[in-house]
Length: 468
Image (cartoon, rainbow, N blue to C red; front, side, top):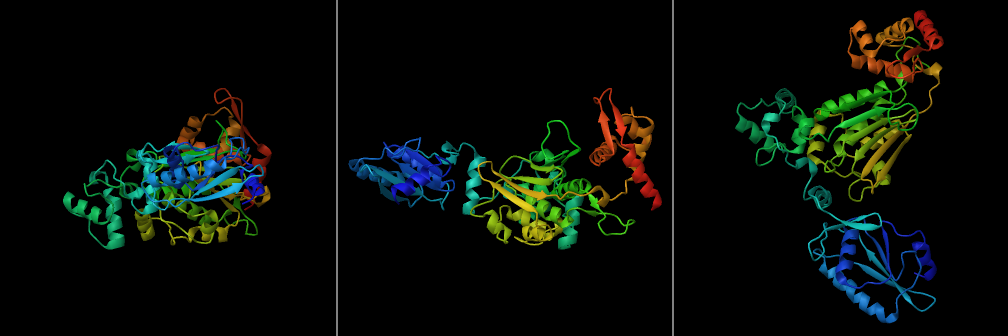
């Protein structure tokens, strides 16, 4: 490496893979820096480089001493780590040592005090909680999130759901005693040796998983426009329950907020979703099955006018990248969940095939692997649908809402629900859909305002419907 090459590499400053230091004084602090890189994605320590990327360099007499410190620091780590050094000679005769630290294959790496460090941006931070530590261990195959115990026993099981699964998949009868049931769940890798349901058993077969692990839900919002709003939305819902129910309801939420397109179909035929359902299916299954359950956060689902975002906790595991994921490479993060989903609990078609199937059906998908934010996002881009291509069929309840609001713009959601004999939630969803379609708007505040029916649009659509 030449001085010119060095300046190009350090010109953009420090980040999670580059660190500058003018000099090294002791092996202990250096060991912490090396452990942080090894527990992350690896990186380079430039010794003889200042924080502002200037090059004070090292005297030749310091080089031998610092190389010995590097050797001592590597020896302090609890697991072996092969580091590489390169000396770069500067024009002024001084030297910069380029210390390359690989991504560790035997994580976690400790310093001599037993502290585990991890990179956080350009700095390092101590790992203080079990959750963070566990996220390092699956790389070695030591632990998986879905096998972790919960605090509930077999009494939390949804008896009917588990009974039906046993009959349909294994042709087994439901065990008659608690002891038999516990042993069966343990043999099926759904319960721990102590008789507690593990996370997989809880998510798949418990009565109310959200009472046991409330963070593992799906939170969905449909926004007007293309940006997140603080208080304005068209539709929102939280999806809880067993994994199969969460999938069904989350998929239904997306499908009801998509445009239905007539294209070249007969006007009496129902419109087709603007995005093929298989795309939504595959990406939702991917999010639920392959998310990082060691991160205590929900899956978030955002629908905008120009895109749909499915945001999963946890970046891609190990060495998996977006590029090799697109060609079918995969890495099993939750093997118990995968094994049961493959038995028909969700529409799962094989490891590594879902992303390929989604891209073949709809190429307008981007994936963002946010390592620092510990998130993985699938972005499904929507195309602009001209109004004349949209299905002109409105549900009966929507037509009734518009008709009644034409007659009385001051009606409240509750009054509409009572009049129509439906729930307030049904009215809220219909109103949100009508507002999104441009058929209905609100003038003034929630209290004291009034509804405005876009009569010219509604009447035109009513006329077309009557012709059918």
